[in-house]
Image (cartoon, rainbow, N blue to C red; front, side, top):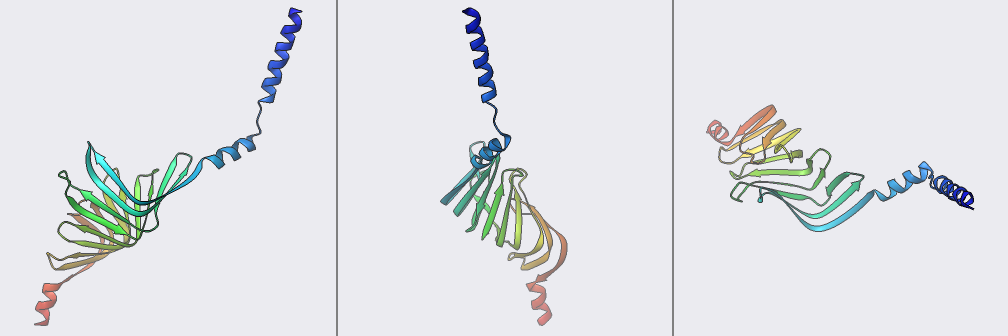
Length: 189
């Protein structure tokens, strides 16, 4: 009787093990189907802080978050406003565009279409695309840029641009010239 019970337990255990085998295609279909999600939010404000101090505020009318496996992409199809703060919470620069996307994979925010970047001196950068690295604070592009500096009465042009979030000092990689209002005025007199 005891041997019969032992055989029954062994047979049931083997049947259980064999019965737990899954087809790899079934597993892949289940994983792929359940790991992709899309969430939408309206009138969004995202706060970035460091040591409990707000450093950046992102405002957008629409946020669509795409999640696939462990990668998240935030899309701002109706535009975005990014405000950069100093240590006292004062806005030192701000960036706006008609479209933006943020990838969790490389910590880059790419803003496109009607991009404008201002600083506290009222300087204005205009371009078609700008990249902001959230970790390093570097703001850059390889596209055409126009930088208006009213305090200097200058407008600079070129391709490629690098600065930090404060936009107080910058580099134009392929400089194409300056239009200075004072020089134009002097030349016409």
